[in-house]
Image 1: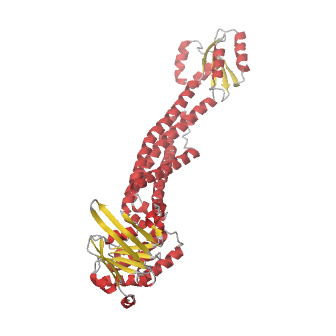
Image 2: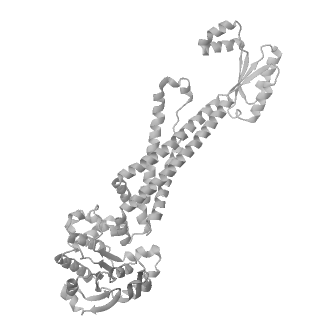
Length: 230
Length: 290
């Protein structure tokens, strides 16, 4: 469970990227955070990921206040999360396999186990037959699916995605969010930042609306919607 | 290790440049070390075959000559004694300098004095007690002069120390330059792999995991550079006498063209590895704040 208490974030004097944001994300939830550019969506994800610190407020994940984590312990927190970006952030000089396996190399798993998990993650995003290709030989949609496979290969409890469909056409975007839905169905908590109203309307169970760093609304749809969208 | 090796290959142009500089730096250090070794060796050889020649007064009576001989023989530092008569001295001169035969003919008389040649123990040669003993013998009636090549040994030893000091100085400056070059090459490699480092951070890599390949890279650059310099030095030491050929003459036997000793070679490699590691660390500390 992710609990955010009165989060404030200021990058520059007098300009608040986030103002008093409080939110509770339950285990296995599927959240969309939406709002126009500059509304603080990415900042909120970065704070949850402990990439940046809030100016004020507290964040508790599974009972641990992550702001009190020592710097040398942050890597443990990050191994419980996966993150996907709009620009994929793939290593184009490495094959798809290595791009996905990088999450497992850092954990020091045996190669046999790494192969098994990478294959399963790529099968989840339907790219297991492209394992030995270079990312540059894949389409945009496929590249984003590689990024998703990398994020989930470590079987994280939480999956964060910052505008994962921003560069994709509507059809591909639909396909990518379907993958996130499938991952969520397997028990992973998913938080996606997006301003794509069509996607949110179609897939959104729980939606947080941000505007200029403030929460201007929350929408929680009945759980039956979850199965209806699959 | 795999990441470090692939990076060494991927950025081979800049790494080659770095290895070349390290190689030249350590080669200079190695050349001076080798020179110092050779000078030390010559000094040692000179002191091993140390002969003190006491030239006798041609007018000295036999009694004084015997007294001188007995006094020299009595010294514990003397291992061998050789009496050289005036005729033997003349014969030696003729043998060693045949081109000066004419001069001897013009002299009409034998100009060489008889001498007593004392071969000293290796350890005794450089001691002050021996010097005092030589001075004492020199002061005896019947002794005209004394000659020994202590000066040469001292000169060789001084030259050896000088060569080592110059090596340390020049090599030190160049090694410092290599340190900064390694540091900058690693910094460039860090920049080139910024994306990868970013992803590693995101997937929960520890600082050590991120830094290790760069450390391995720095150490590899150092070891490759110094290894290459040792190989080049070996070739130099082997090929230099061939290049000089017979021009060395009698010196050929004295100058052994010695290579670095094993501890010296290992120290150079270990030193370069440490330098590479420190170069990487300094670069990582500044440019890889995680």
